[in-house]
Length: 322
Image (cartoon, rainbow, N blue to C red; front, top):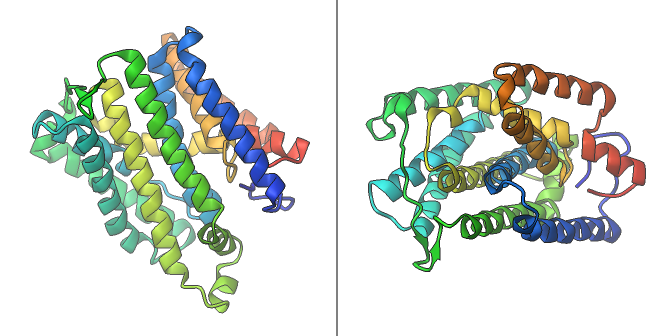
């Protein structure tokens, strides 16, 4: 809810009210998108990455834990869901549950290893674990290596909703995004979230107050990984494939970029950051490899001009919680 600055906005009923109003506006805008003529594929992709960035922001923005390996959760959710739906013949709802559960299990295993260290050591451990998962998925028979899992059937959600229809699929993705977003919102506005923020600010003091900080960090890591896996599972039904590009270290870098551009430690910053980055990839694809240069320029400009990120600067200017 608050940015990691010296002049953060305290948790108050007014701050929560501001965030709920913003959520209501966001929901209405998302529901109206099919009427605007916007390309639905772009919006669905942006929502999947927005949920991924929000999950990452929960870990670093509120827990102070920098992960360079969050792509492994995105990829795991995608691969498990794709395999469950295409090979095992699971319906979409079970595929989503299995993929999300797979990411949660991976979060528990890798979290137990990573939280043993702090700072840059924690970040490098997550990077190493992510690279390990990349090579596992490269060699594992069920992922089909560099070819990935292609032609994933979209099927019928709950036996009723035909996901092959763009409008139906869009609203399913919106529902999944809003569910994940509300889980994060509830977590950061709970006693659990307050303890996380105290760990971010001064872990030793939190320990002195009797909190078992390792347990809180592990729970935050698992929750973040689970929601990142949900984003990967949803993305499978949008792009109808699961590939190594979702597990590469470059993807983890994009997640960091989305969060920093939008606003680290803000509720809506990762959403805006994800939309901006996905938009540059979608609408500037004709520039080829120069898209990376453009993204880098945007990042540098935001760091130099908007120290708190785009949403963070807006929230600071109006003294509102966003």
